[in-house]
Image (cartoon, rainbow, N blue to C red; front, side, top):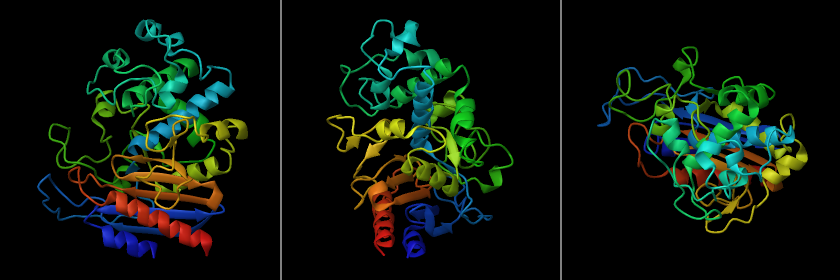
Length: 340
């Protein structure tokens, strides 16, 4: 059934799709369909060589990166390296000294008042971005999570990619989850959008799709991670089990608790969205996140479920319809399997 759902969506919704479903920690369904690279350009010219997608294909995870940044910050908080309710100005006094009301928790709940995005390749400009709204106002903000990633680097005294490796991917053995995948992973990496002006030719493959993350060097708090469905399933299972191996159960519960944010259209945890209608379908109590490239992770402890869907919905161009419907269909199939 899962295979049928993906085949019905490929290549219309995306040229490649991989999905995994686990119930009670055991994988009960998995499917990979389509082609890792299908198009040569934005006009849809088909490539002669179109390698098939596989269960171990590597996808640009896009905003799912935000969950890893969140776990890093929570891990640092457990080590008393920072406090979620202290001002960001403690870590970035030059950029936030005149706005002491903004806290790390604000960044992780998208209530800092910072704008959604700022297209620049300059770190100083990003960190100096003025707030557009008072603190406490919900605005989904890449700028806020970029800032959160920088706070993690200062508090953790390591680059963000090192912190992710040391505090998450290493302990959980997520061997294919990395920033800036190298040549070894390139043959398994799925293409995203056609971007004139990027090095090389054709569609983007092996470098981050997000323009701001790319301009900042590929390692940021809001985007930049690549990974496989199996790795993401293992990460989701860790969160379902109380983040065993990376966080205490108390901290994991705080991460997935409704933080009382209004105006979001769903319940907002720390980094995670709870019952996001764009992803959850019938799993209205599930938490997780989606990614602009066509990725999503959904964890529903009540139904003992972890659901991963990875696609390249932006290949060769963004705006292709149907990804919401596919996410809902996969969530519904997961619920059917959990009930059976």
